[in-house]
Image 1 (spheres, rainbow, N blue to C red):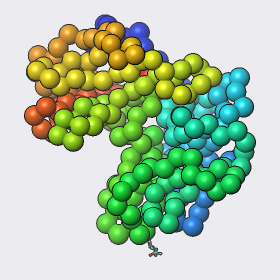
Image 2: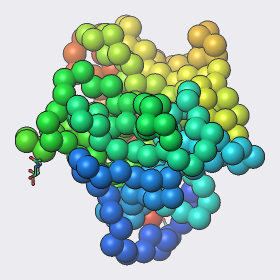
Image 3: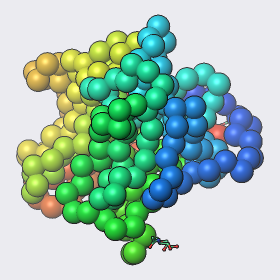
Image 4: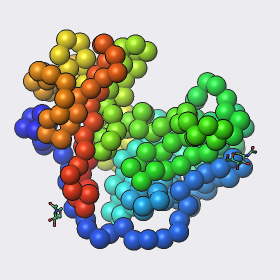
Length: 245
Ligand SMILES: *[C@@H]1O[C@H](CO)[C@@H](O)[C@H](O)[C@H]1NC(C)=O
Ligand SMILES: *[C@@H]1O[C@H](CO)[C@@H](O)[C@H](O)[C@H]1NC(C)=O
């Protein structure tokens, strides 16, 4: 993996960048985030806000590093861009996180089926946006389980046959357009787990199989049941920001 996949590692090195402030990291019921506002994670590493990609006037809600250079790692409404600045991000009456356009129509939703009476959304300092049931603190939805094109430390890329779900990376169409592009990245559990990059559904690059579950190159290959595999990584030096995309 270190060799074949090395060329899509972006390494950002910034030291002493994240300064202290008393920004807000949570949206509660009855609160909403307007187009010009942002959530900032509690250690100031990540920001959630509406943005426009370079050379585009379309608006998207995304999570990015809290840095002057725009480094978007997750996009909510990839398929449904907004054409103006009138949208809001809020918790709906059934407990879902939603983006509403200027006409108050739902453009994007976390789509959880069981309604939660009292929930709040928190942007964690790992870059994970979580929707939390306030009655028991449980996470009912996490952006880390709905990856865009970026794989952050502690996030699991996986294939889970027990409920037929995957958490995979999907490329942007172009640097100006976050709509899903041709390439996806998964770990495939059948037999011995292997990493795959797919192009339009056909294998494009694959790693050699992992001969066993465990650590290699700072990654951990695991899985919670037969037929499931997932992979995470941890960084050893917290002053170096590193992620895959
Ligand atoms: C929601 O939960 C929070 C935290 O437990 C609590 O402080 C708040 O009063 C609750 N709100 C409602 C409307 O029940
Ligand atoms: C962590 O990375 C920074 C920036 O590259 C470097 O200056 C520092 O020595 C590294 N620390 C360790 C413990 O490797």
